[in-house]
Structures are given as C-alpha cells and as structure tokens.
Image (spheres, one colour):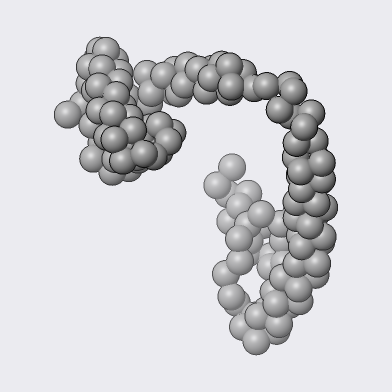
Length: 146
C-alpha cells in the first residue's frame, strides 16, 4: 500500500500498531521502547512497507524523539543521580576511555590488514572513502561519475 498522496493513513497505522505493541510488551513485562522498536522494524519501508511515506515517517520520528526526551525528563531524578554519581560518571567515563583505546588500537591493525590484502591481491576493490586514490582508474572513474 502506497499512501504517498496522504500521509495520515501511514501515521495512523504506525500509531495504532505502536499502541498494540506497547500493550503486548507491558503484558510481557517488557519496556515500551521494545514495542516501538519492533513496530518500526516490522512496518518500516524495509520490511512490510506499510509505512512507506518517508517524509511523514520522518516527521513522526522527530516527534517520537521529542516525546522520548520528555519521558526521560519526567523520570529524571536529581537526588537519585547524585546518589549514583560514582556509578554513572565512573562507569560512563570508563566506557568512553575504553572505547577510545580500542579504536586507537584497532586502526593500525586494520591498516596492516589492508596492506597485507593489497600486497596479496593488488586489484582488490576497496571502498572509495580514502582521500588519496591508490589506483589511477579509481580517480578517473570517480571523476567521471561527478
């Protein structure tokens, strides 16, 4: 079903299925967010395609983010955050630092793997995301597409 002329049916389908999914998740003692995510995955343009109007879905997604932030703000408790400050800020900082360390350690390893693959297979296609083309035909075909 393509509701490209009128976005209201797409929005109503998403809202009705979202409410049904939340009721189902609440009965299964799961968070409501799981219901919303499953609804979006099932009804989105890459699955069943019932909600295929991208502009209307994008606008609805923006409202969803606003409502999510509002609900987080309602559940936010400053005294609770202060009592958990060591856990929240300590583990949060540890997670950020660990992620930075893993990425910094992984980049040279990936560069070495790419060098080994290029040595073994010189014509191995690589993504065109580098700033310096490694083969002359890459720059000529990329320039031709512009």
